[in-house]
Image (cartoon, rainbow, N blue to C red; front, side):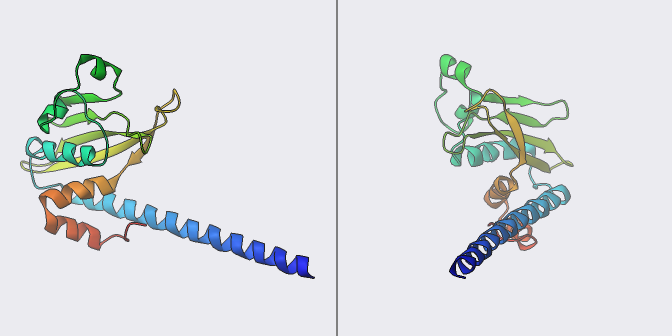
Length: 175
C-alpha cells in the first residue's frame, strides 16, 4: 500500500512538473508570436542607417562580439586581422534593397551567435530581426534557431519607449 502511495506521488509530481514546463513553453511561444506580429505591422520609425548603431549596441550589450568595422561603429578598437580571420562573425554589408546585415561571433555563455538584418520599410521605417544561430561553437554544424524578438524589443525600447510599451502590452510577460 505504501509503495502504491509513493508511486502515485511520484507520478503526480512528474505530471505537475511537465505541465508547468509545457505552460512556460506555450507562454514563450505566444510571446514570440505576438512580438513577431507586432514588428510585422509596426516597423521601427527610423531609417536603417540611423538605427544600425543601436541595433549593434543591443547585440554587443548581450555579450555577442562584433567583427571588423562594426566594433569601430561602437567606439571599440578593431580586433585585428588574425582575430577577424578566426571569428565566425562578419562585418556589416549592404543588401540590394538598401538593408544592412551582419553576424556576430559566438557568445561564449550561451553558445549562440546572431545574424542581424535591417530592412527598409517605407521612407523612414526599418524592420530589424535578430536570428539566433546555435551549434557551431561546440560542433561542426550550425543551425538557425529563429528570431529573438526580445532583442528587437530591447532595440525598440532604446529608440521608442512608447512603441515598446505598446508592443509589450499585447504579449505575455517574458517567462
